[in-house]
Image (cartoon, rainbow, N blue to C red; front, side, top):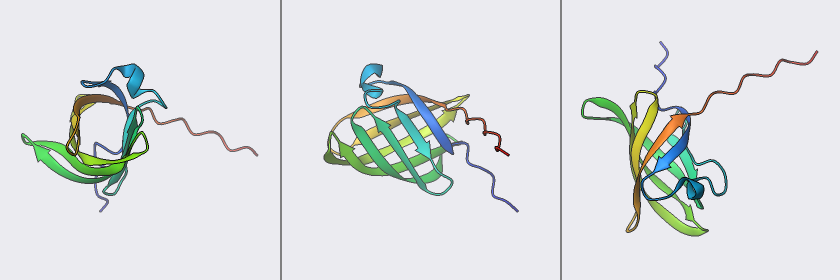
Length: 120
């Protein structure tokens, strides 16, 4: 029997962060958090990019995901942790930089692009 798909799987567009304005979040590209089918993921906002090692868990009895991350902030090495829960059609969570900043975030699921018809 197939394992049910995680409610977190896919790309989520970051629509707000408590520590940074949206202009910064979208500086290099649209800010996002993305979860794969396995225990991996990635995120990008501003000049920050991280590869995540994720674990499904619960918070207050609801499905949640927690992660540690390793990446860079303006090309300087950076790492930290984070967590998120799904509330309605939004992802709500926190991201932490080890020994530094932290921010709440809200993200919305990116629509899956329609598949292109095959050319004959």
